[in-house]
Length: 372
Image 1 (cartoon, rainbow, N blue to C red):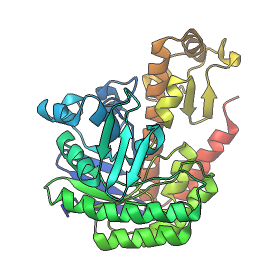
Image 2: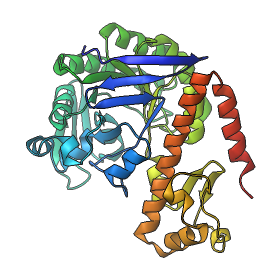
Image 3: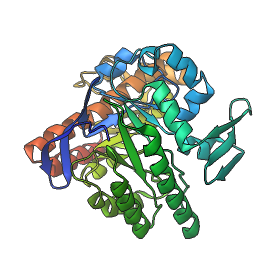
Image 4: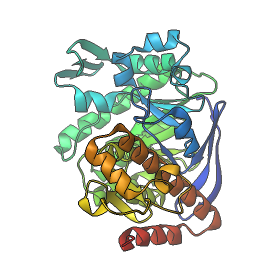
C-alpha cells in the first residue's frame, strides 16, 4: 500500500488520539469529517468549514459522477481546486447511495447497473470504475466499492453482501495500485451478525489496506446494536491503522464510538439539522422552530468562539427559521459544524490527558442538564 503515516500520540482505554499524515495536511484524530457530497458542504463557504477546525471533508462518487462528471472535474484540476479546498478529501465509493437513492438497480458479481435519481439515465459502477472516479477526483482517501444493506435484513442477505464486498475489496485494491500520497480504505460489512463482522474484518486485514472503515451501521439499527458491532469489530483491526465509522452520527454516537476505538467519522446530521432549524450545543439539541425561542435574547452559547453561536440571539434565529430565510440555515449549519469540531477537539485533549471517560460524562451531563 501507500503507507500513509498514522501516528498515535496517546491512548486512554480503547480511545486513541493521533494524526493521519498526507501531503496536503494532517487529519487529527478523533476526527469528524463534514460531508461535502456534491463538492460543497451545504450552506457553508470552504473557508468557514476550515475555520471550524475541520482537517478533511468528504465527497461522493455517486453524486459527482452524475453531476458534473468525474472526467470534467479532472479536466478542471481535480476536486480540491474545483471546490477550493486544498486540504485532504475522502471520497465515499458510491455504494451506499446506489442502495439508498436509485429506484432501479441491478446488482451482479461484477458491479451495479442503476438509474440516476436526477434524470433516469443508466449508469454502471464496478470496483474498478469507482476507484477510477476517485482517482480522477484526486481523493486523498479512496474507499473500496462495497454493497451496503439496510438493517434489519435476512441473515443470508447480510452474508451474501459481506462476501461480495470482500471480493470487491480485492478488486478495488488491485485497481488502486500503489500511488504515492494517497490511501485506500477497506470496508467491514456483516450487518448485525458478530461472526460476519469478525470474518469480514479478518479477511480485509489479510488483503491489507491503509485504513479500515466500518460500514453498514447507522442504517436502521438501534444504537446499542451499533455499539455492540463496534466492540466485536475494532479488536480485529490493526491497532496501527485508522478506523473509520461511516455515516455516524449524533454527538452521543461519536463519544461512545471513540471510547470503543474509532478514529474517524462522517455524517450529514449537523448540516441537515442546521437546514431544518436545529442546533447542537453544549446544552443539548435545540429546535429553533419552537415558539419558546421567539422572545429569547440569548445566543445559542455566549462562550462559543463561533460567531454564529455567540453573536445572534435565539429570537433572531427563530425568526429566520420561521421565515424560511437562507441566512438561518447558514448560521445554524455553521454553529453545528463548529460544535462537532469542538467536541472532537475536546476528545483529543481528554485522551491525551488520560481523562476521556470524565470528558464524555461531563459532556453528556451538560446535554441532560440543558440551559433552562
